[in-house]
Image 1 (cartoon, helix red, strand yellow):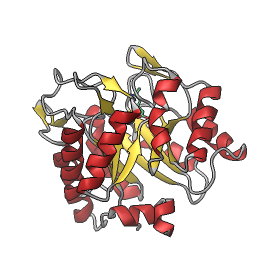
Image 2 (cartoon, rainbow, N blue to C red):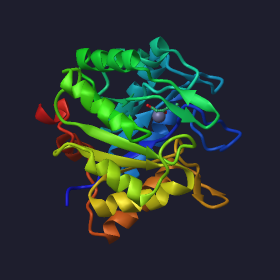
Image 3 (cartoon, helix red, strand yellow):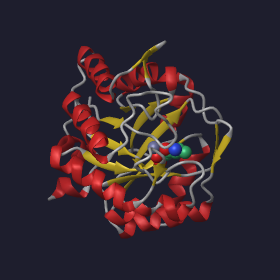
Image 4 (cartoon, protein in one colour):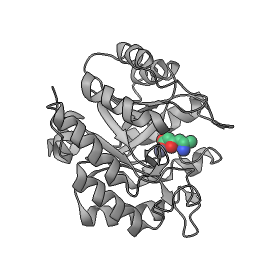
Length: 274
Ligand code: KMH
Ligand code: ZN
């Protein structure tokens, strides 16, 4: 089986320190958290940015500082968010793309997000995909429900996305696809051959969905963005703790962990061809 790519989603676009005191906020704190996750075995860092007061921001200068701090510490693949937070405009959300990071997320449809709506109409999706193409950024399709897979494939048909296809199944968001094994198998079935996939299980679904992905040959995303608990009633004190647990499970199942460079090869990112 191919090596396991672990993504650490260390900040998120909605979480606050009221929910967990361990949430990193400043660029240095975020980079330190990413560095610890990398030491534990993560090869991709999914990044959101925060203003000094902790509120989510898509300001490219803040992303630039975060990226620089991370690059000073390790060679992890940096994947910026274009999801931002549910209340942000398209213009705000696409700011970090202008920094030409290696990867960025691309949600290919609109979904209820708890009591909010995470809005991604067709024109916005195409605008984001075009900007990624122009800036040489590899998209990771964020799939919150089944129909978003077909929407992603339509971008490929239109020539707006080229090369290797990588999907992240975000499962268990209230309003999105429930985190069940049957739903995961169904989504895997819909992918074109050669595509890779990862699973981000939300809340208590993080651990079972990660275990399933390890078994099925997929990849895994963990981190505070999706789940702040190590187990019921016990907060995780770092993203690295969540990564380390996935590493231990994978090793017990004879699945090796991909380094960032190995992940670049699996995902056929341009840096792997240099
Ligand atoms: N914050 C959510 C509304 C992404 O990063 O691309 C969406 C999100 C997805 O976090
Ligand atoms: Zn995100």
